Length: 428
Image (tube, one colour):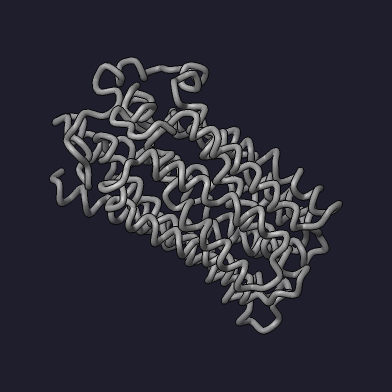
C-alpha cells in the first residue's frame, strides 16, 4: 500500500471518527436532558456519567491487547455496531433503567472504537513529531465530531419545540442512531483495509506515512522488543508515565464534567437550550482551532512548554465558573478551556505512546484510557453528591483544582526549559 493510499485511508478513518464522536457526544448531552425529563437530578446525572465509564474500564486493557495482536479490525467493528444499538436503546427508553442500559452500551462503543482507532494510528509508527502530527489530525476529527454532536443535539432538541420534553430527546437520539449507521457502513471497509496497511508497514519498516518525520521513535526496534508482553505494572513504572496519566485524567474528567453539568447548571440559572449549546460548543469549537494549528505551533515552540501552559490555562476558567452569571461569560471560560485542552489530549497520546515500544503502544494507550475511565467512574458520583448538597457550581471548582494538580505533575516532569532531550518523551 503506497503513501497516497495510506493518506486516503487515514483521512477516511478521521471521517469515521468525526461521525462516531458526534454520536457519542450528542448522546451524552441528550442523556443529561433525558435523565432530568425522567425525574432524575444532578446526582443521577453523576451516577449515569460514572456508569458510562464502568464497562469501558473493564474492557480497555483486553481491547488494547487485541489491537496490538492485530485484531484492531474486530475491535473497531464491534464498537461501530454498538454505537447504533446504544443510540436506538436510548431512543426507545421510557424510564431510567432502560436509559442506563443504552448509556452503558454507548460507553462500550466509545471505548472500543477509540482504542481501535488510536491503536491503528500509533502503529503507523514514526518519531515524536510524526506521532504529534498524526494524533493532532486524529484528535482534530474528535473535536469536530464533538462540536457537531453537541451543537446538533442542542439544535435538534430545541427545534422540536418543547426543549425539555422527552419527545424532543427521542427524535434527536434517533438521528444519532442514523448517524451511527452511516459510520458503521463507512467504517467497516476502513477497518478491514487496516490489515493490509499494517502488513505493508511491517514489511518495509516504514515510518509514519502521514505527516511524520524520519527519526526513529522513542523505543526503536529495541524498545519494540522490550515492549512486547509488558505487564500493566511495567508500563505504569516507565519514567514519565504517571505524569502523562495525571494530565490525561485531569483533562478528560474536566471535559466530562463540563459536558454533563453545564446543562444542569444552565437549567438552574435559567439559561436556554440554545445558550447551553453555545457554551458547550465553544469548547469543542476552539479545540478544533488549536488542533488544526498544533503541528505549526510545535515546529516553532518547545513542545514541553506548550504542554505545561496548555494544562495550566484551564485552571482559572474552571475555578471562576461558580461566580459566572451570564451566558457569554461561560462561553469565554469554556472557549479558553477548549483552546488549551485541544493541545493537551493529542500530546498526551504521543507522550504515552513514546514511553513504550511499538508493539505495546495500543496497550499503553489502553492503560491511559483505563486511568481516564477509572477517574470517570469514581469522580462524577462524588461531583453529583457535591452538586446536590452544595450546588452544581461546586463541580467546576473541583475540576479546576484537579487541573491545578495536573499542572504541578506536568511541571515536575517537563518544566526545565529549554529541554532538547525532550525528557520523558524521547526515551523508552
